[in-house]
Image (cartoon, rainbow, N blue to C red; front, side, top):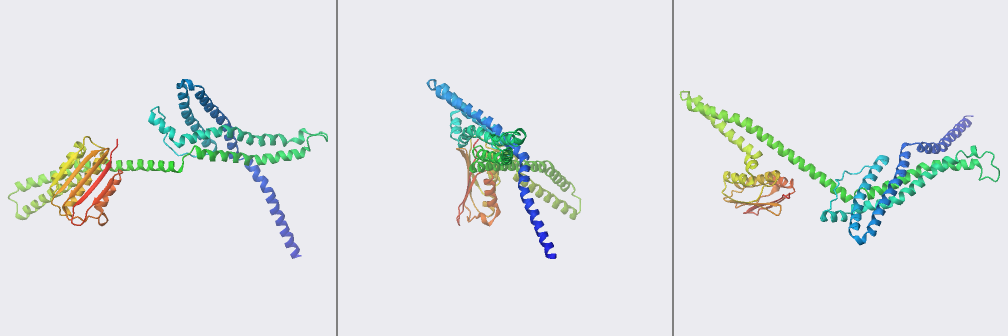
Length: 431
C-alpha cells in the first residue's frame, strides 16, 4: 500500500509537471503577445516603412534630378549636394524612431554642420559616416515596407482566421476547409507573430546600430575628445583656484604681515630705553616677521605671479632671471601672447629648471631661450652644472614633465654626468 501510494504520488507529480510544461509554452506565448515591447516593435516596423519609402523616394528624386540636369551642370551639382543634408536629416529621424520604439541609445557625437566651403565639403564627402548613413536609407527603402508587410500579415491573417468556426458554420463539404483547422492555423499565426515582429525589429536595430551608429574608432575618438575637454576644464579649475589663493594671500595674510613688520620696526627704532631682553625680543620678532613676509611673497609669486598676468611671459621670465642666484642669459622671441595656461606652464618650467640649476647642479651660468613659431612654443633651458639629473630620483623634474603633458606638450631632458643639462619643452599653441 505504501509503495502504491508512493507510485501514485510520483505519477501525480509527473502529470503536474507535464501539464505545467505543456501549458507553460502557450502561456508564455500569450504573455509575449500582449507585452508592450511587441507592440512597440510593430509600430517601429510600420513607421519604418513610411520613413524608409519616403527617404528612398526623396533620394531617388534628387539623384534623378542630378542625372537629368547634367547639361546645365548647376542643377546637377545642387541636387547632388542636397542629397547629403537630406541624408543627415533622415538619419536623425531614423535614430529618434529607434530610440522611441526600441530604446536604442546613441552616443552624443557632435554634429559638424555642412558648409559649402570646398575643403569642408570634400571632408564631409570623404567621411565613411556619410556613406554609411546613405547606405542605411537605401536599404531601409526596401527593408522597411517588406518587413512591415511580413510583420503585419500574421497579425491580420491570424485575427481573421481564429473566428473561422463562427462565420463558416453551415459550409458544405466543398468549403475551403474544416473551420476548426483554419482557426488552429490562425491561432498558431498569432502565437508566432510576436516573435516574428521582434525578430524583424531586432534585425533593423542591428543594421541601424552598424550604419547609423559609430564605429569603434569613432567611439574612441569621441572618448578622447571628452577626456580632453574634461582635462581642460580641470586645468582651468585648478588655475582659477591658484589665482584665488594668490589673491587671498596677497590681500590678506601678506598685508597683515607687512603691517606687523612695520610696527615691529617702529617699535625697534623708538623703544630705545627698553631693557636689553625686551630689545632683543623685538629685534628677533622684527627679523622673523620680515623673513616670513619674504617667504610669503615667494609663495604668492610661485602660485601665479602678477607680472605674468599683467605683462606676459617675457616680463615674467625677466623677473625670474633677475632673481636667480645663477647668472642667466635670457632670449625671448615671441610676437604675440599665448594662452594663459601655456604661459603658466612655460613660466614654472623655467623657474623650476633655474632653481634646480642653482640648488643641485652648482651651475655657474645658465641660458634660457623661448621662441614662438609654427604654433609651437619652444623652451630650452641649459646650465653648465654637474649634470646627472634623473627624473626617477626626484619629484621636481617628474612634476615638470607632468605639467607639460597636461597641455599636450613634450618634455625632453639631456643631462650627462659632468653636464651640461638641457631641458627642452614644446607646447602646442594653435589658435
